[in-house]
Image 1 (tube, rainbow, N blue to C red):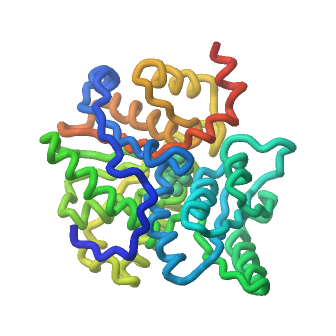
Image 2 (image 1 turned 180 degrees about the horizontal axis):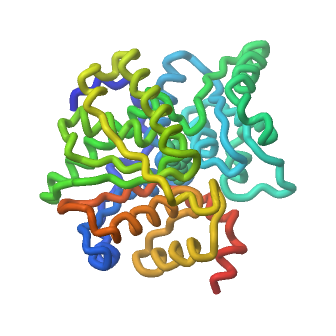
Length: 331
Ligand SMILES: Cc1ncc(COP(=O)(O)O)c(C=O)c1O
């Protein structure tokens, strides 16, 4: 792979398994595989860990002592950042959108457990999140500390290197299995995973692979802008040559947000339960569940040509605990 990525701190359990989803694949009439990035770790699970390997290494290189990031109260990225900080001997400060619950659960419980400092902000303040994080970094500076700000979802050129590198890992596994990867389907929430995958495929000379990011919020026009900016930044920082960037391609798949970001319906929950019961694969309703629903519906259109479809399971299990009532209602 022709990519000069920055320093990397090993945090994830790699390589994650690549497994066949025989029953679901044969129902859909496709060769279906799952890349288990939900198994990158236990508390440090999910796609964010691959990004954090590069982001935390950069923070350490800059002698930061605190990771500062943002997300929803239920954010997987914020939790992964807080746990990664603890693993690296750093502190963390999270700017979280939403109200502080009387009793934390899921990701917030883990944030608290690993000692993250938290600033809660309202949805109205969310558009100002970058400025709020800058203020947190300035306040830390005034106390003699050094904060390192990580954008929403860890989605910048440094974080995207995690998924550019993941493509090399996937292709090596596919080579061993004599598998021709034709498409990679995954959830897109802040764009970094899609950007990294697109870059990694181009850098590996595999522009025949379709990188299909299922939008779980916003829309294709928004994500195309975000991903373009991440890739431009990767060129500016010298991680990748302009020719590779020019060959990087992806498609944002719309139509599977359902009732909106972090909202679910009983039909969606039933589909997640069916997958869990049939394959032993647990998806979350906010990200991986919507991406999997998108994969199933797109495959059923019958327009996908031969070759393996890889579902990249990006994790999110702790988010599932906020949906206990909906799961209980399934019986
Ligand atoms: C479990 C999970 N899957 C997928 C995503 C989307 O990845 P990205 O933010 O890189 O688009 C996120 C975060 O947004 C996530 O937490």
